[in-house]
Length: 167
Image (cartoon, rainbow, N blue to C red):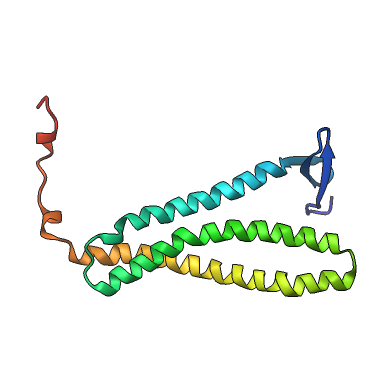
């Protein structure tokens, strides 16, 4: 071995026609991952990201210091909630484009599909990724900024022993 790893990725069909991605590292070590499990993990991570954005939408009508802060929060929360749903459709569309490119067969037809659908899809995904991360950062920063002007009740001392019935 020359001090590095060789990584071979190939797809095989086993028994009932279920596709597996097989990773071989240096020919000695092999990892297998079910393709359907990978798709399920991808979709569940997008749905988890949508739920994360939905939690931030709970504060839609909360009290903010300025109307501009409320608007920034609402826009960021809405985008963090909806962008992962758009990503799910993009993954499905990208998979369909790959199948369409294989179906075309001819080199010029594949190039047309790539230029007309693939390139705009890539640009849109890149823009959505940038917008998603900017909105996530805005939500984190805004959460700390809102601590500067808390209502008077937030600073009240709580008599915790009154909540414990046996004391």
